Image (cartoon, rainbow, N blue to C red; front, top):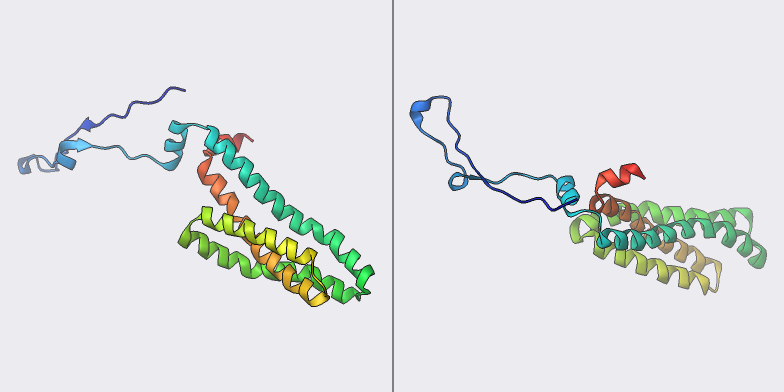
Length: 175
């Protein structure tokens, strides 16, 4: 697909009453308006989009690992620390409580400061919360770090909108 030449067309608009003369827009030059999809189709799907998809794929994997690790972590802690079924269920619940509060925060944060910074901070917090929960010394610390994990994982969901915007929709619809 070759690059399109950008051209400016000389136009003049006549009002309904021709006696009023011509209306001049931008000194007689008309600059066409483009949608985001048209711009991305013009640019094409290149290395930037490939690298973006790989990086965002790691974000999606972290999101999936956070949820699936609960299936391993909760029964192991139940056996090692002699937890009741209610205490075991509270571990998973804390992750979803963190996601509940994190979703609103990360949505606001992305709109205010940008998705790149939000994803970087979210990924950093995911790493810290995973490491901290790995070395938690008692049940209360596990609950705190699970809330922190859920809060940070909620920011990883913003990567879907970033991917949707940066990859043109024709390619995504064909996948």
